[in-house]
Length: 291
Length: 309
Image (tube, rainbow over all chains, first blue to last red; front, side, top):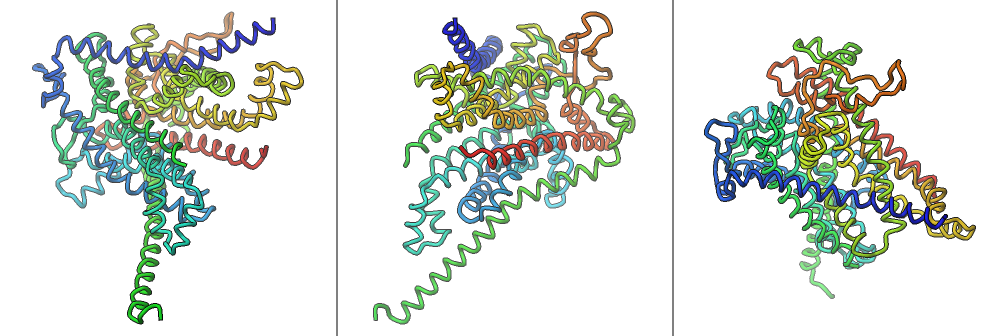
């Protein structure tokens, strides 16, 4: 009797653990099923090469490039902000900061990632953009720059915490060896620690980029909801995520082409982040192999 | 003499240069770390300055309205609370059970490896994709509608990886000697887990759950995708009724709105007065997440001090 109960419990627990696999399968199935319906009506070629995205117009055009371009533009700005700052913070916290400073700084930095993104959106639109407009007069009220900067700040903790962990995993004797040859902390950090912790730092960068690509509310609020094939950060743009939100706010009848477009945009987004996640996972795996 | 005078000068100069560079980087690092703090406090102060005048009892007990001074967040915070109940009820049992399986039962085979890789991947999927899954699966396939149940399940899926990870981490930190002592007394595996492993790791699990829920409270995108309404001027049906059987689950299927959506709605209005409402809603939302994160940080700190195996 007891044996059977033990077995049954194990089976139930396994089912729960498998639920995550079902979630993934569900995501893949639903995204591709609905996107398949989309591609029955619009050719993949038009979708990938069209330079106009106007699915709600009377003469709809279904080229995904403006949305992808908007996504990459905002992500690019976010990356320019978060990767250098995140790396410097990681080096500082891992190599320079005394124990107390680190213990206080880490939780506060992590709070940056905990603030609801809609609050960041408010901040980007109604605080940062007006300030930026004082310096850049031709910056439009909705633009890619302001949400890009805010997303960059938001993902600093993702970059810095994983980087710092991997730097601190570098054994002490390697550091001491460097100090013994007369190197300063700066030299040790940049010529010894960073190269040794490379996999972890790369993983942290990729996690950060993937977060920036998937970020939704900040761009939906502050970037302007306008599909725009441009690399000019001063103009309004729309990202893949913001498009999905923009369509969902209105009432989208099930089965219409508008309904299917959000899944087509979703598949594009999912494939972009999946690629990055796999790359990041591969780098993370390498961390453990080093020492 | 090993070195000439001018060579010594050269070396001294180089050492001084290196020291200066070291010092400069130390300052740069400090400043970069401070950027986070500065942004954080600027954001809080900005919200307070904008939203302070709207805060107050009427704001909490009013429905949204066409008139910004009369509008409030009653339906939004009630919606958030109910959605969180559903989220907790789904993510916590499933997450803890998965964590237990992966740490205590799972052998190193392709199945557990697949679950593990998959869990890693899920944690990196953008939240809006969960919204699309929920739209296709819950709203249209299972026909749950644009309801509190759908919203709660969506966020439950979203924080599942977080609950699993924290469960695993805290189970992992329990030394094997505890398990062996329990087995030695004749306990079965499940008894060992239920009476020892799980109670001892509860603190860590709780920390993870709280952090997960604090993320879920602020999540906007997936909830918009499943079709939560932005203007709700009524409350869901009450969970307690005066007639038999006194408990009603009708609220699960009611339309709803949540705090971040209400805030988003106010931000997207052109009138400046609505932005003040958005700021006030933002303050409350921010306070909720900060309090939850504060509890989690405190718990983690406490546990680290108390438990020494």
